Length: 289
Length: 133
Image 1 (cartoon, rainbow over the protein chains, first blue to last red):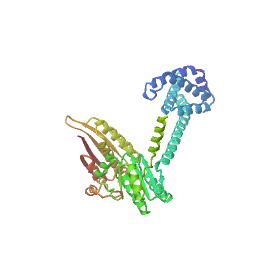
Image 2: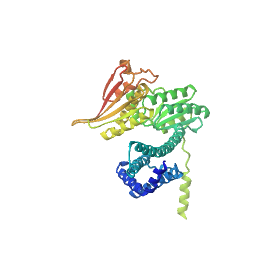
Image 3: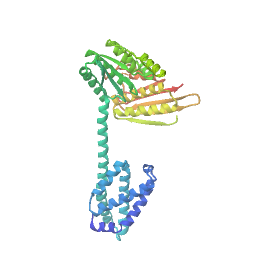
Image 4: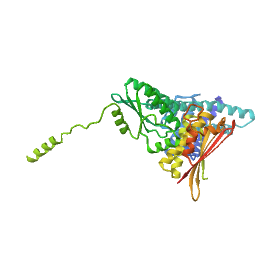
């Protein structure tokens, strides 16, 4: 920034700060900071404007600015707070410098505008980049987290494996399910695979198509697939859509599916012999004493 | 017609957005869980058709509140290539993309009224209505 302009700005920093604070407070009436308390808003404003001035003094971006914006990102403040603040600052600064100058011709005017822009724009860019960087980071982390959750395979018993599906199935996930399912069937040597769709909110033709394909692929490698967790409303929509799921067994709940799977692998659930009589004897003997 | 709200379909995840908004509106109108599932499935089909065949488009919702009946209108529109085989797409088992071919006839069965307008090269508009009984 031009030395002369810089001196004007720094000498009258109090006036400029005052003007800026007033303008920004008017902005608060907009909805984006409605949930932030007045005190916090004011103290943040003061800090913001101090950070701005400290970077003017040091001719460029300061580490204070980085710290400040990082803290706001972590607290979840909206980006619009910072960009609005900088835009207001640009307006206030231009107005103030012009009001302090005696002679204003178009040359001088455009020079001031450019000087102010040259200073304000990099700061805005920096802030926007920092915010979007943090968002991208969050999105990519969540994508990884989601992928880890997307197609789990649980070998519950010898030869019986369960794949519980929760949430929306999109094309990418459908592919992932198919791969995981086939790999898992081979790896765990499963004879029966239960696909549980209790947590899938909507079963449309695409989801059904992918499930049918997965079941068919499982059949090809010599195992059997049981579709479980079909809620009544899903059953009705599947009938309405006219989807044929007759090629493999379906059950309403995982429990029933598991029983069928046990039957298919020639096993049954047997309740362990409880030694009720022993306990009764014990109680009787206690009573006698 | 009380209000209209639209969801733009550009990415695969927009289908989920449209479905959720549709389900919310259906719940407010007073549909039960079975009808909500029907409506959500129909929206899913319509939105997926837009995503698969037209690329971009939008799904709009309108609620109808008249003295003797209430309902929900869903309009799916796009500026895609249009449907050439209009008679065939309404038949079960017809698909140009290797799918099940149950989408549009299925939507027709899921909803109470179904109206499709499509011109080759001029996009498609599908309007469906579900009445609250």
